[in-house]
Image (tube, rainbow, N blue to C red; front, side):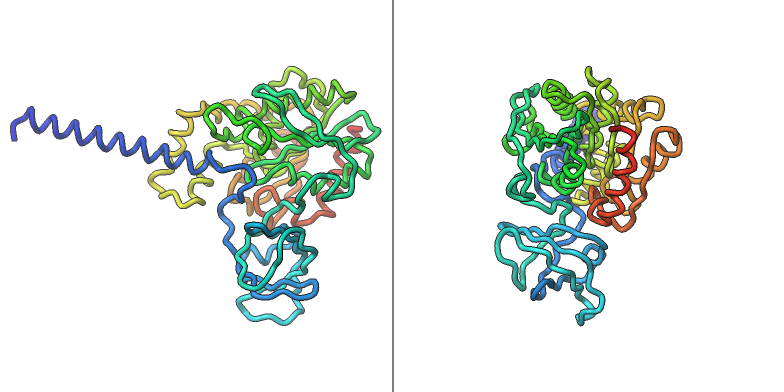
Length: 375
């Protein structure tokens, strides 16, 4: 083969490999960034329903089905709620029996394939919880954002921000707690959610652009009479809260942050999401690179917002080592570096954004202690 021909073949091969790498990276980033709102996060297995009975459900035995606490059970056209494991009920070695709290949608029976979810409720505050609320629209950067406003007489409001894999129904888990304390709660949808505008390229940004919808929600709350707000976010919702506290033009109205399973390392979370959706290991660095190229340098902005020196208000961190989506270690480090402002409540045996589910009583007591001096 002549040198010129060999060079041409080599260049063509490199271009082909490069194009394949770009395509692979784009595919891998799509897997993580195009997940529709409300679709379950990867990682937890599907469980088979083996039997149901009065206030009981028998599931495939796994680490997921053995977790302590209260969880939603979901499948197409099905939503139920299960409570604690019933250790003393007879069962086979490969099954687990849990208390069946209620079936809210569909019919549950043997053979169903289900997933556990931290989202307990379906519907609105009125239909799911029996709490009066207003359906309101928040003027957002990309268009109107639907939101629920559960009123209360206090002038400090809570803005509750769901994260990946859930919808604004997820914060309904804690709305009764706030309502009992007469705290108004604003629960917004944001770009990409059902009923809200899509981002221009149709991708989730893991909070990097969505935080501007939080800024819009704070401004709306202030216009409606809030003197100050507490931002309570889960996962990427917690990241959005951090960004708003650092960059919002009305950040002086933010009195405190409640961060449940916060995404503090954007690249690690992106890798975890892609890996959990079975993207091959060699493609994971390409997924991160492709995502950065398509949606911007998220990591730098998030690192700046979550830097210990950037914090200006009290923070309650609720996180645990069993979170396979958002690493726990950055939360531990943040709490260690700002003990004057950050309180870390470690929750074990809880998946991402399910710290309340694992132990609602302890979670709400931590909330009560954190909020009392802020109101």
